Image 1 (cartoon, rainbow, N blue to C red):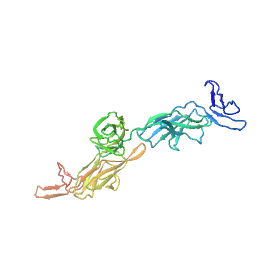
Image 2: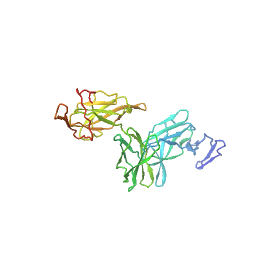
Image 3: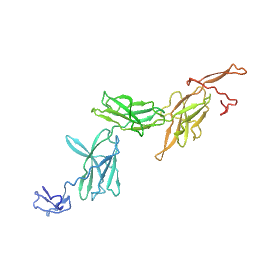
Image 4: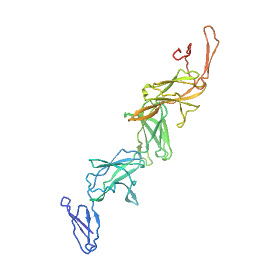
Length: 383
């Protein structure tokens, strides 16, 4: 079979010469779609020439496991709605390039008036290069493809969790080159003042082992950004995605007695409702521990007096509060504060003008103490 075409700027009339048929025919048909008929057999077939290339899709919103693709099909006519766009990836098998479809039903959106389509590919592999194109079906062009775009997913993300008002814990599962180390950087969110934390974590070449570190000496109630840098298994220097996390607000105690203690927290914490929570135990509660309410109703101020405590007992307190971020209600917490109630206060050697006071504070001891007196013991009468 031989194919002839005229110059691009000339008429779109084209012709096919079929040497294998007994009777040769020249047919003028629609651009890029051809039907050949034999008078004897009424045989027909479609032949696609190479259509003018449609621009490659653009990429955006890259993460470690997803890519957003956007492409423009405003110049396409005769798109078959029953045959949606398909996303294809190039791979090499035995040295030959092979295109395969990613997923079977990836939803995409359309921007009216622009001829612009977009979709998000999810579940991809981190730190991986993808060569992608969009395939389409048209009653005019037949089966066609956009130009290809090559893009790499980002490295696996790191996760951050606030440990206290001054510490944040980082974890990640990135395979660095064995024998090298991850380095950790930080900066206050909204700034570009990155600084080295001087924390290094050894790499082991595996993505199945979790690497972790805790960044200390941070400012309370501040949002930080973190990133780890490393050499991958191919000895290429890379950086992880940037992750954000805020340290917790400070929670403090004051005016403790045998069975009560005053809690206070930063009024700048804001929030629409504060729930004072208590946990009884000798060790810090885990993430799945059950907390109970220390107050029957939520508190709208930044202080609360906890009563009904037992002497010589260990407690943990925190304040749960609700704030509005991006029009959504978000639950946050203050720092977790450990507290041990006093064991006892004893009075002895009473005279007309003096009393000897002695006390023990169990696990919670201090370097200085204040002795207060009150005639009635009511709040506000101590001095």
